[in-house]
Length: 584
Image 1 (spheres, rainbow, N blue to C red):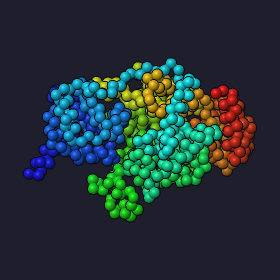
Image 2: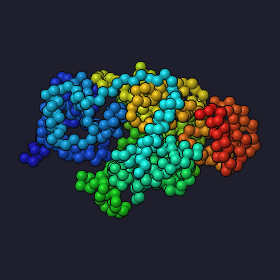
Image 3: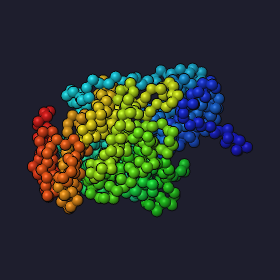
Image 4: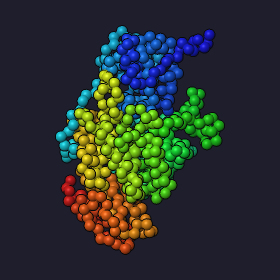
């Protein structure tokens, strides 16, 4: 009898594909999509309560095609519904029209009431948010007024009482921290204070036993949600490495190293790839809030929170780029070698025709921008860190694939994923989001500065025109990623060329000093003084028998530098000279 009752309480979940809509149409049903994350506590709760409730189960069985989607495995759907958090509940008509989109955990009673109402009246709810098509901006750069408005938003969003940006959730939000750290490097003491206060407070999210940062905290910095997500770890490594370079605080380098150690111990795969997530909870009976306060032995006695077994190209790229940043700050070769292994995994196991990268192992899966973008950025970072000819062609082919697969339609900017064959309703329209377009703009612009290739600059400007579209700028949001992209498109990167014998101790020391200079927008070239000059080089450097560095800006270069301790000052002088020449 118990087995019969259990079977009656279970739902048959279908995977997502455009064929789901065809099934719903032929059977005169609606479609419910439950977008979850395998590491998400409230997703598990909803599975155990709402989707076991007899009324909910009966309604779904009789009137709906029920679809369950792992957002980590489905970046196209994740990008479409990420604003609704996880779990996200979406109900569609059979023609693909959205009827309702809801955020977070839904209790059984309200869910049953909602489903019954939709069966009775399958029309869009009055509060449904409909995405409108965005017309791109005419220019790829902010006006002075727009720039001032976004800076004011950034400063107003800072929590003066508790630090950080945002009141409900406290987390490592990389872009506002990066914006303030770069301003601090230029002498802005208020920006330095905001960054330091936030970085210090966020250390409470660093697991003191295993390393790695928890996803976020609710209300203040002391009520953590214990999921560990690759994007969070990568941001933490990058930002704490940059913070160490700018603010010279050893605790920030320790935090970056501890996070890299967590990746190595818990998320690293022998193939070279990385797993993307670790659950907050061990099981339904052992929750994260009871598990993570324990020491190592106490934790291991209770079991291990699940690590997602999948290896996605995106996570390999995110980890690799972060580890290159840690190498720049620390000089530790192990971080650089692990980054190389991650990108080589992506090339070996996830490469798709034409320079793109698949998300997972399935060759037939929908291509998503996030994978090719993450691997391309990591390859460009490796080119800067090594000068090895292996990496720049990989970054360029990734940029070409991004332009061809995601940025060539009649929509503004670059889409988060290719449209699926047979897509209907909302799925026949691309999802375009501001954050990914900011990352595209920054990647393609720096690539254009390194190579001089006009197509890369055109890609950067296409993405920037979406960011600067009136409909996007009008959103009541803090947009630090737009300010970062705009500043980079408007100016030259930090550019250091090291001339002469590159493999002796002096050349390596100058190279390390160039990588240690605090900047997320840099170009470092190596030239032995004999072969062809690096690509897109307009300066004629003198050959030298002794390793020598030259720092160059838009209109001037430094005097020759042979002492690595003097390179940072030379770069700063060139940056100040360039700023004066370009004006405010």
